[in-house]
Structure formats: structure tokens, C-alpha cells
Image (cartoon, rainbow, N blue to C red; front, side, top):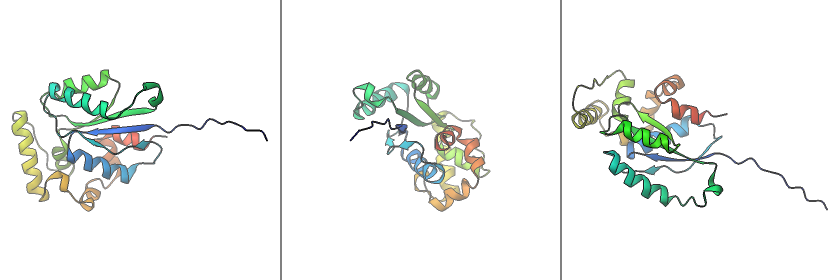
Length: 181
């Protein structure tokens, strides 16, 4: 009996790190609706909110270590995806930090609440300080949808993301990952 060894192509593995609960919910919904299953996405890690680069680095180091990806050579097909808002105090610095580390980044423009409101025609002009603007988006979201963003029902999300083009145009990084060949 001759044994043949064959090399099985390893599937890419992505571990998503989401800024908060809303990003976790949106990621799960979009993955369920649009993923072609060519990439193995692990359960998202909730970072519990991000305010500035210093706090983000502390959380980043803790959460990356918690993944136990040592020795590195055994986890070459594992990538990290960070889903964060673009209206944070240090959004650009955080994005630069993650880019330098070689991670994948999807930013919500300006934040999940503002993005979803903009998608239904309720544009959120940013003319306030960051903290006030974030509060305005959250308040306007709750007024329009009747709930906080992380409590939005699947039926309403399906209405908002009624066409794949909307998803592709607003969240192109996630779209490309879910539609990877």
C-alpha cells in the first residue's frame, strides 16, 4: 500500500476586532448576508470602545496576546480585521498604527449610527466637536429607528442594505473580504 501525501490548501482565517457592540452586530449581519464562505471568519472580539491611541494600544496588546497565536509561523494564514469608527479623537493615528502592523481596517464613516442614518437619507453633517457629534448621531439614530444601533432588528438591516451595491460602496473593505475569490 502506497501512501500519498497531499497538501491541503489552507483557508484564510480572519479574526475581526470590533470597536463595540454595534460593530459586532453589523459585522455578523453582513457576514451572514454576503459572505461566500471562502474565508473563515472567527467570532468577533469586542474591544469595548475606543477613545484615543494610547487606550487603543493598551487594548490592542491585551486582545492580540489573548489570541495565543504563537509561534507565529504556525499562524501565517491568520489575519486581523479591525472595524472602527472614523470619528474618534485619534482615528487617523489608530489607522496608521494598524496599517504599520499589516492589519486589515474597515472604518465606519463617520460611525455606525451616522453611516446607517446617511444610508436612509438622514445625512449627519459634522459641524460639532467629536464628542458632541458622536452623541448627536446616537441621539438621531434612536429618534429615527426607535432603538440603539446594536438593537436594530435584522429586518430593518435588510431594508437598509437592500442592494449589494450599497454595501459595496459604503463598506468596501468588508465587501471585498466577503466576496473574495
